[in-house]
View 1 (tube, rainbow, N blue to C red):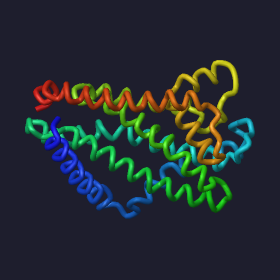
View 2 (view 1 turned 90 degrees about the vertical axis):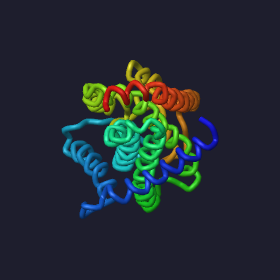
View 3 (view 1 turned 120 degrees about the vertical axis):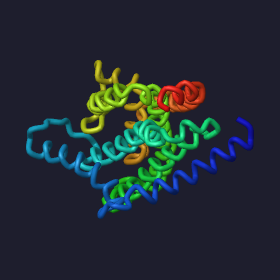
View 4 (view 1 turned 180 degrees about the horizontal axis):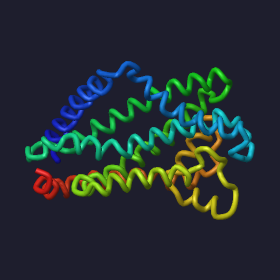
Length: 259
């Protein structure tokens, strides 16, 4: 792609992003409050279960409320980034017949839209954390690269599956099932295991590594798995690059099949 093509792609992605952001909550009474309500309700369920005694969990150095709320907010951001590529490409099928239209613009607009929504929800969370005495300015700034790589990992995984998902609806159903399983394989509502197979599952799971280290850095300013965090960050970059290349290679075949 030459410089002109790149400029056109970014211009189209900006126009799509603005259009989508203006239209998404046009007919919604609560609007962007849904970005905060959804993770808060999910986190509230787990906090309630713990307080009733039906859900036993080992106490950690961080109060359980901020711990699980932060984890759920980060998980929602990752999940939104993973699903946005397939959703936006599916909604833009009418553009596939236009051969010169850059599909990358659709993807970049979807990524930007999900990122802005996540940023809005995280700003609210950070304000609440600061009011409760958690999350210093330095720890917040230190967590931003890890949070960015977590979102990039979700973007890469989602885009890698999107071309196949446009051809077979089973991929979308499989993603839903996989995300439900992954939720319980990532220490979102329970402490990070310190030994055994549970620790191995976390250490070899880039999603778990980036979410855990991002939350640790945000709340305490410390990172327990620096080497694994670096490896997972590199994995996120490589996946995103491969996914964009795969979309470019597969677009001709997809356009013929879905048009």
